[in-house]
Image (tube, rainbow, N blue to C red; front, side, top):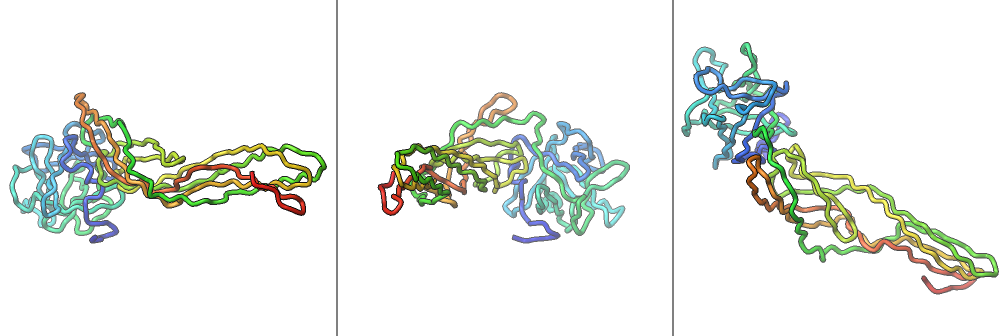
Length: 326
């Protein structure tokens, strides 16, 4: 992967919006939104504080990996040499063609993307009495990076229908001792004792999606692997790989009869796999703003701590001899 100015060549989170009917909006580094001026202007874009219907664009990816940007009235954005200033290439609305000025390379850094025009210059926020976009900078700075957001003013709603977990019988759990406690009965009579043992820990789960699909709309749910209940999440930054911290708190109690002159040794045991990998398919209903429902089948994999059969096992030892295990 090509790296340039601490950025990576490629779509980044823009992938989530490719050919999406909801379109994409772009937010500048000063939080203004790209807004299409339409035909008849020397610039195609002005910056507005509020996202309007005219802030919606569509992205088409070309076989070359470059993209084309189409505004809400069907015009394409192009870097044009207007001839008045050799260093100024305003972004103007034009009809579709295969001209190189309509095609842009994409770079990504964090949750933002930059566009490089055919002449090697990056699109940048510029001030011409109002904020606009021009192909103006040889090296991309903060003014060249734009945050993609969903284009529609009324977003769809995602609802989980079911979570299909692939067969995880290959996940081999191994026994592990979490804690030990001891109770000694030094008397001459039988005594009862209750062992109370707790497993408390934090672990990191990792979710890797096969593709970006959620249009920057955060979405999460829980599922079950053995006795574990991890979560799956899609983030507002359209991250393909997501790390989540999971808190585990489980308590076990066991009452035992301890004979005279006997020591009881309790072990808190669990069968676990600390780096389990479980593929899944999330079946999701996408309810569009017009009420239409589309069913999505989104694949991914969960990586994390799987466990089962947390229990207390007690061994009795005569003070000076052995007793059976309980």
